[in-house]
Image (cartoon, protein in one colour):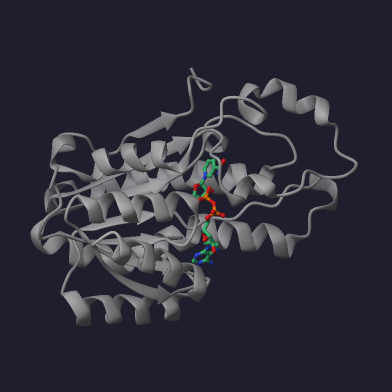
Length: 249
Ligand SMILES: NC(=O)c1ccc[n+]([C@@H]2O[C@H](COP(=O)([O-])OP(=O)(O)OC[C@H]3O[C@@H](n4cnc5c(N)ncnc54)[C@H](O)[C@@H]3O)[C@@H](O)[C@H]2O)c1
């Protein structure tokens, strides 16, 4: 049960539903956890939950889409704990909208957080993970595997994140860093509250069976991420594992 004793983990979006569940899971298995979030309060809240459960956590405000913020945060983590061993990119955002009306600023923001953000964090932390060997899990989405309506930017960002994962897995394979992705279907977190376009056709959601039913709890995703980060997954890299109740089958 103490699979991560002596390991330091970094979780972006650690103040969110999946990120918090993962922080608690990894800490309960012995890891010390750096909780990064755009919201300092959310990061602090997760770190407090980890501490209350007897674990060790560091809360850091970080905008993953900002190279300077990522560099400063990396410096802070390494200064505190030395080079980390594990990374989960869970920071993400979603905005639904009709493509013909979709503001380019919103498109760039979504790509900036979901795709460029993961790249920036990997760029900054992978050299540290490579020192002793490590593992990365990127939180992609069913939306990276199939098309979802009114969701072009999010789908494109998550599809890109899956390809980023595969590329990095090969690039770092000789440096003992594994890089994988999970692709959740619907997860019961704040992200589900994002409004569907008012003039959108809700009928299209019937083509996505899990949009209403079949949600899972964030702990279900955290369990799978934890497995992929652990030594039990030692021979798994460059893969994208759907955690969607079979939706993408
Ligand atoms: N909830 C779902 O149904 C679902 C499904 C598939 C994939 N996902 C993915 O799971 C991941 C976790 O999302 P969640 O469901 O826990 O939602 P959430 O909204 O609870 O958590 C997302 C977290 O990311 C943080 N964040 C947003 N922009 C950021 C930035 N620029 N820098 C740092 N942090 C930032 C938010 O503050 C928030 O705490 C996301 O990548 C999301 O796309 C979620």
